[in-house]
Length: 143
Image (cartoon, rainbow, N blue to C red; front, top):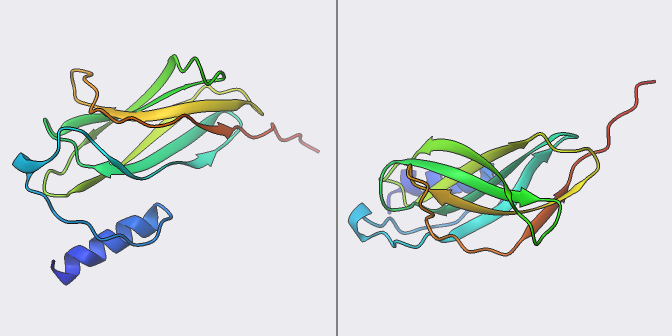
């Protein structure tokens, strides 16, 4: 691999708070149909009423237009709420960073979530993960 490609991987990994990783570039026509999460998911930030969830996965096959999706709720058995963020995949890169903003949350509340990615028609890329959780912040009182 070229030095610039390894530098790109190291910088990308450091931006999402992990150790640098080295990945092999896989030609687009040989990409696995099943997407693998390789870093995260994790809460990038959380306020009283919103959170940003991020993760890195292998780049999905299919169209470049994609969505990062977070299924969430206050009960780990009922993740019926959904937030999604549109993005355009770079098929020349083996990995993709997804960031999804979840809004309209209640302060000081624990939420459970899973992540996925989908094509423009809503078809899942096949990400299978356990349920994670985060708690929104308490509303700050003014003095």
